[in-house]
Length: 274
Image 1 (spheres, rainbow, N blue to C red):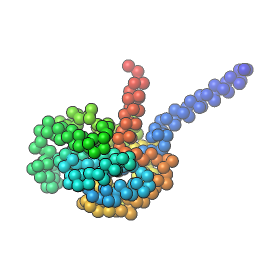
Image 2 (image 1 turned 135 degrees about the vertical axis):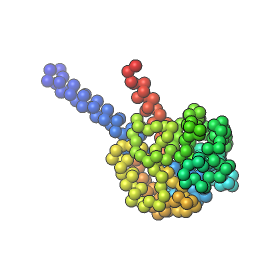
Image 3 (image 1 turned 180 degrees about the horizontal axis):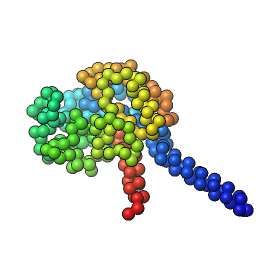
Image 4 (image 1 turned 45 degrees about the vertical axis):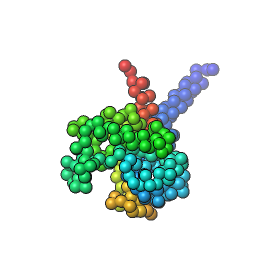
């Protein structure tokens, strides 16, 4: 091989290497532009009556954060089991959905579910008890947690610190799009949805596509069933957009996305010079 051919080969190899590096950097989500996670809180009838049928009709999967003490969990347990069998994640939203009643605007918090009155051991034990219940329903051990009301602290301590080994990650309530390196698996960003139109929901997805980031939706009621609600038609339009662009968008339950992020973060940490 003459010197000119060698130089051309070297340049081609360098270009290929750079292109591969850029692809890995900008398309970390199963080789797609972005990741979208659809989460639904509180284990309400609307999950089983509206959200899950809508997802199933398009072969999309979501994460449903169940309150262990919810009457809808007890009354419709076989339906939750079937949802898990179809690939939906049953996430942990604590046993009693305790929220910090000492904060402003928390008149809805009762003495029984006031996180500020909990001991740390009670908070941790109730979350673990809910994991036991969920495993009895779906047979799985890997899952994620969602902070009730987004409250993370108890007596100035982040109670989830004692639970990190029990979960792949925990979803919070702070809005934001993030790359894998930016995600804090102890407090994953999410956009809380309450009456926003389909254009808003789809625009968020387009932003995630353009920035190659993670987008997490936080729903409660779908077509009713909760004071925080998304219109049934708006929800349907969002799902149709995701389905129409499934070659560019990775739609998966939170546990799968969190596992992918954890693997990438661990690999990046191992590559850092010591």
